Length: 369
Image (cartoon, rainbow, N blue to C red):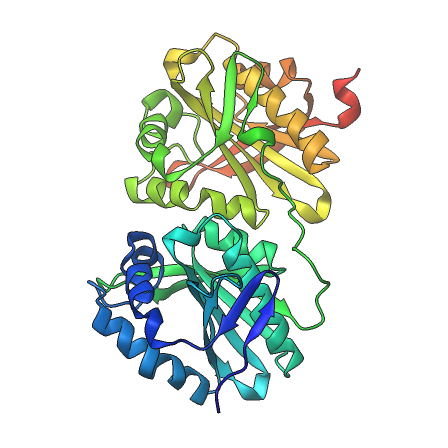
């Protein structure tokens, strides 16, 4: 039986046709599609596309899933693919996935197609849909949020690249009875993509910052105030930077680089770790030693705290420092934080030792006092 055509949310989901072969080949050979879609042949040829159109897509329906061409309702040209796989009938569950051709990106096609197929799946008996994306694939996770999916965690080494490398996948889920519309964002994007006071600039940390972040956290003066006081492995820094936007999107942490506004030079980094149930967040920051003594850390903390209160809606911010880190304590006090006490043995040190932590807190009213 020929699958029905679904036309809603500004896209058309229809069965594949032989005249889609060239577009399927071009879309699946695109470097971005190759990077984020596990299991594609590489190089991807028109022969591969023809096999998909004539055998692969029909087989998906036979197996209880779906594989639709996403087409422009006005021209019927292929824009991408959306489908259901790994059905678990006893759980009324399936996995939803998609790719969008290069000529159709930036138009909301993936979100529209995901919403359209999800609505159809729920209307025909599915209770739970999973959407899996590589941790570094922030664009796909933004689609998940816009389509009403919620984060459920990371599946370690659940994906496999063409070269055999295991990859972590983030799991996003939508249930049939979830509220309509996009999922809420606990941590919104920065207004205009950055925060600035004219002297320093804060912007979201990304994979492109890995070299500078590694240089920062392996500097001996910075290492001395790390917890524990050890330099990180380069692989950990690469993973941190590549996954920073994902952490932001799921509402766990907002990691930012600190830049000099005049030169654009890398100054350091700061992070807000969101403790959502408590309505509070922890702040952390580090600067390269060459920027010490210029007030940059205080400026960065002030920008971050104002964003946290005004845009995230926090009720409280807190930070901790080693008791001997007087410079960091002065930064917090200049930014309005108040000393709240000492937690003995709170932090891990070297060789199994423990270190005390001096605690500081900031409430929204403190900024006006």
